[in-house]
Image (tube, rainbow, N blue to C red; front, side, top):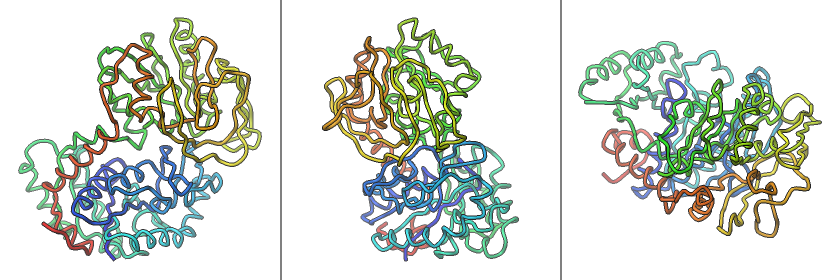
Length: 484
């Protein structure tokens, strides 16, 4: 067995990026590497080649390993639909909606399946790098745990704990975790990493020595602030809270931050374009009047977020935007909102009900039936695209189709061409499709291949980590030999 688990002192300490960087680093040394996350909670998901869905971060980590993503890489995915409930995805397929308390009672029963998925990856790889969730120091969640120490013990995987120095109190976070963990869990942690350091690393030498002295854990190194991470798709909506508005460019595109926003990485290729000012608008702020395009993004709960949108007054802003001649694009749940009505008679995404849509497209949506998970390809404005669909419900009406997919037509567009909607995620990843779309706003695409941007960022992060971490020590801990 060769495996290593990266856990954190909390959420958003950079575990996903570090795992992706380590995956690329070891893959660059000729190893067959696989990523694994026992349990993820995210509304950003990717469709796998084996017909399921996993967290977007694990799909990125698979890319870092230069392998195709599979459902075994993230066997349990929770997609929040409310403050107390989430859709449960097990090995890529929907397995009902669970309240938080009910899931806490059930999660232990999923552990054998989780370990089985891990063993399958282990059998095909030289090294599996595992990512934890949240923090093992949340000892109130320890009973029945499958995301952190529960899995680490069940699969007998050594753990390295990550502390985020950028948020401060990193000594207290690591030493505090050591203090609250029981002896068995404490013993499963073999060392620590510091992440997101800015400045001269020698200034924290004494701090690292104190952590070693107070915990007995090995110091495997300290990573600087990884600027290249900004060029990678973000997984968690918390990252959107730190997106600053750019200066005025040729095309201004705004995206309202819905309460259950999903798959917002759809817009990363647009954000990377120098001539595009992409702005995420947080709750409490009006949609700006200078926007060329408003994109209604995907959501995990269409009816709830339609009410949320109206509660923010964004429906009024949107109507004013349309009167000014602005354009609107709805993707997935956002597409459903643009129609005349959205109905959820079976209560698939929350309480059963129905509501009037925004009335900008002559379509109606009924949320029912099996979840659609499939890759799609086709043409937009004469340019080729590849993406995927991931949704419940069917949308139909008299509106003119917007896209042509292979063998079919899809989406809807208004007669004046200013209101558009579709179910396709990843629409702007292809360079030709993105260029054709931006040209309609008078903007020129300056990125030939967004995939090259991501690949370059992964290689840059791997190179930085190679100089910042004790890679030979991490490899020995995992049980694998590497060339130095």
